[in-house]
Image (cartoon, rainbow, N blue to C red; front, side):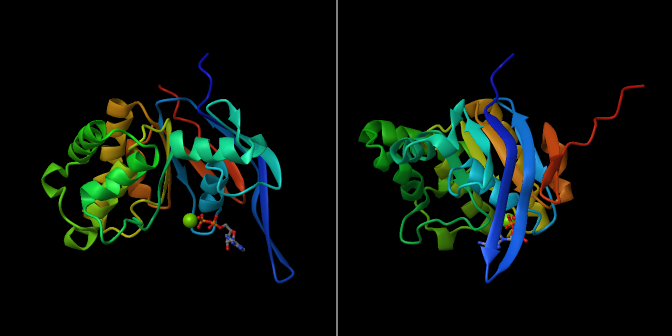
Amino acid sequence: MTDPMVAVEGLTRTYRTGGIEVPALRGASFSVDPGRLVAIKGRSGSGKTTLLNLIGGLDTPDGGTVHVNGRDVGALPEDDLLALRRDDIGFVFQSHGLISVLSAAENVEVPLRLVRTPPAERDERVRVLLSLVGLADHAAQRPHELSGGQRQRVAIARALANRPRLLLADEPTGQLDSETASAIMPLLRALVASEGVTVLVATHDETLLTEADRVLHLEDGLITEPQAPTPA
Ligand code: ADP
Ligand code: MG
């Protein structure tokens, strides 16, 4: 048996604002094997962002545990958590979050500079990543000179720069038209194959689910997995 890339066990998280308690997660459990493309489906407000933030160590649960690549995210000292986020986990958000004054190539380069990748290796990695996401000819363009779908593809390339084991994508197609959106899942599928990365993508868009190896449902703060139809 392979060790899971992500193991979530009994995860709870309740937001408390102005005396009101909003239980976003009520004991979610699931695990994901390495090299899979897994979709987390849930309507708006079902806790998808909360779940991905906890898996990525951006937030702390009230109860339960998250293991990423065998490490207990909640128990890591701050330095190790920073290293985990920098080296092992890539994030893609609904809004691309690119730096507007930098070109596509320079945006992808940022995480490589953070870990002091030597210039020649950096240039090569940026070239490979931009061609992986189909933007080899757009390296010099700034975000405002790219379409929404192209910007999101730059964001995906940037998230993969330091070869993370795990890519967390939070509604990456949320701001794209449906035609542009439909190209993102096949791209993630191709990246699973070429980069060996494990992808967890949260979405409320039904049309994106067909590309996924597995679809998990997030409902009432719990994860359920619909049974695959039994072959006749
Ligand atoms: P989704 O990403 O599926 O739309 P979220 O994880 O953003 O869901 O939110 C889950 C629930 O938690 C919602 O009811 C939301 O209103 C609430 N929530 C999310 N973030 C906060 C916050 N920072 N403070 C208070 N409530 C929050
Ligand atoms: Mg969300």
